[in-house]
Image 1: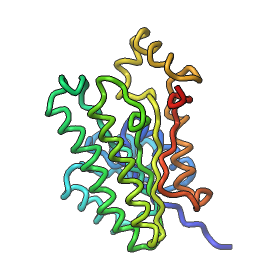
Image 2: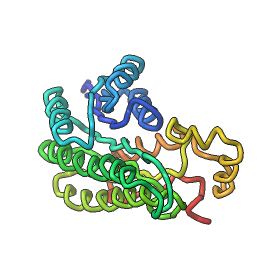
Image 3: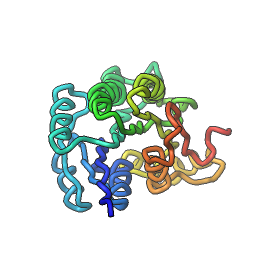
Image 4: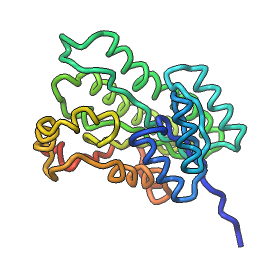
Length: 245
C-alpha cells in the first residue's frame, strides 16, 4: 500500500483572521502547514495550537521572503502557497487618505504579493508542480468610497494572478484568486461591532449577512486541490451576491 505524503502549505498572514481559518482548514485535511506572519509571537502561538510550523515572514521585505523560501526548501519544498497577508492601513477618499496609508497598503498588498509570487513561484516551478491561491477582494471590481487605495491594491492582485497563471502554466503551476466581500475578522471588527455600520453593509449583500471565515476557506482549499486541476487565472467572488447589485 502506497503511503500518501501530506501536502506542504504556506499561508501568509496565517496568525489571525481569514489566514488562521485557512491554515486550520488545511491542517484538518492533514496537510503540513507553515504559518507565515510578521507577528512572530502570534505565529508561534497559532502554530502550537493547530500543530503547524511558525515562520516569521514580512512579505514586503525581499530578504525576509528569500529567507522564508530557503527555510521551506530545506524542509522539503512546498505544494501550496496561499497569499493571504494584506492590510487596509486606513481609509479616506482619494483626496483625504494619507499618502503613508497608501504606501503601507501598496507595500504589503502589491509589493508583498509580487515578491511572494516571484520567489515562491520560482520554487514551485523548479519542483514542476504546485498551486497558488491569492486572496483578493470584490473591492477590485466594486468601489466603496473611502477604500479606493485598498481596492486599487486588490485590482493589482487580480492582475498579478492572471499574469502569474499564464507565466507559470508551462511549469505545471496553477494560480487563482479568491475575492471575498467583507468577512468577520479582527480587520473588520471595528465596523462589524457597530450595529448601524454593519446593517448598512449587510444591506448591500443579497444574502443579507457578512461572511464568516469558514464560508471562505473551503474555496481556497478547492482551488488548491486536484479537483481544480483545470482552473487557473481566475478570481472567484465569495460575497453573498454583493457584486450583483
